[in-house]
Image (cartoon, one colour):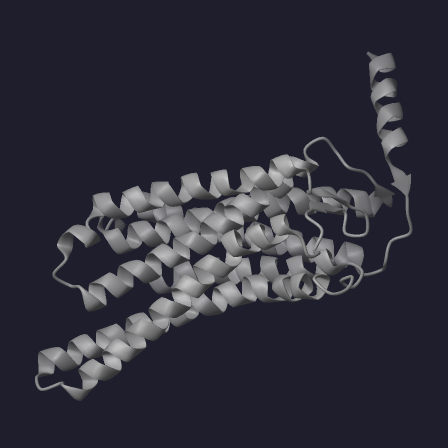
Length: 293
């Protein structure tokens, strides 16, 4: 038994390299672990409340719950990755463990799931506003079908990214990710994960704003005025969705755009994931505050 443990330690040491870390690595790792743990706790509380309280099991709450579960899944994947990074930083080693590539795959999948869950929320609100009499489009069965379809899509879209072999261990950032450079697979990943859902939400936002403005010109009764106010509230919530997505992805997208023309700055993944992790806490807080408290 001792011989086996010594052999494993020897193999691990042969694949690791001692490095000199920056002073800010450990404090940032600890901060991110705290943020992600908080996001997991908030998401778990929200999901438990939805499961216990039958009044929360409406179609809008089902869509919000899907977003919360997506955020929880992303937080778990990121926490797993951050703990490994923290371990390597603490021991001042560079080491790619056996699950590094799969962690990157699940981060891509769960991030995409979160973005598309927010898009489904926006589309549902648009249907309620513009097509209130199309009840079949608002049915629980239809929305559950779209949720399942979105999860199937996010798991399948990332398979080419995984099989292409472009996910690699980034030594400076102690994480497995695709390099941020101009390549077909990079553009494909960006379109699927970020550009399509964000563009869809922005389009929905613009269409609802234009619809409400047009309707406000023709308000003649109190009922219409109340409905217009409710629609404006929905528009505001869609704006919150956009701000969360921008907070999650803008730093990462900026480094990606920079990578099309030159090399991104050192530790760019570390910097980008600081914003992603903090924005994830904001997303879970928003879910609990607006829908439970």
